[in-house]
Length: 301
Image 1 (tube, rainbow, N blue to C red):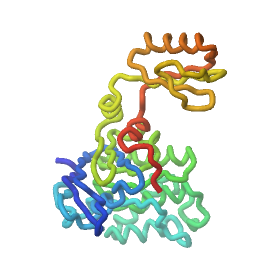
Image 2: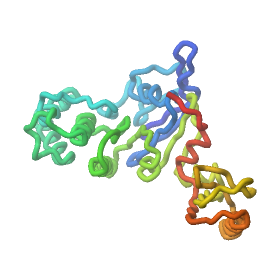
Image 3: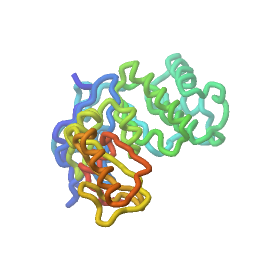
Image 4: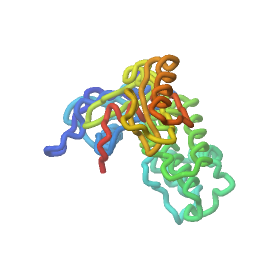
């Protein structure tokens, strides 16, 4: 059984179609990235999973139960905006959110102690949160959303605006949740982060799923066995040799299927055109390339 199952989700706000048949599955111990341009439907989908938006069609199940009547403590939500009380201490914030999640008595004390150790904030537990760094507040924000130890956790941009050290600590925290069997759904605009951290990704656009799978699966389905080649030159020849396109002032780009055969031919063509090559990069297309291919290059505000 999937920890989270969304099937053929539809939602319309007046004339605006927010969700147009999105489906996804999330399993225990998995980190699934939910990606899409602005306005793609990510926020509506997350709100529907959290029970804040009622679908016009389709179903959402958390641990086998309808999202309209979820299992007790099944779902945890960590918002993008830090939602903690700045005048309270870290411990007081955890106690407040623990009670809001229905944790009481001795169990509350135990889970607060766990959260302080888990976040690395035990030594600062008695300080007002207003004195905390952005990374510390982010970690506390995550802890406040999972004090009831939910089996499915929705995380909206949990590392936005934090330094690399805080980002690593946050992913260590998320790793501990996964080891405990929690299923994590992560929305992010950080494609490199999603590529390196997520087990699978789901890309949505215009309310529809346009790609799902591991990064390797998506790359193979989108680009096959092709590689991207970037050549830095001292001067750009005019006209450009066949197969090359301008990608910068002194940078040329090509897509090749056979690196061993085609790259030497491109370099030879550049030399024949009077351009000296002083930099070469060959790489497989990654998640960023897949994302642009599936959603387009149009800037969306």
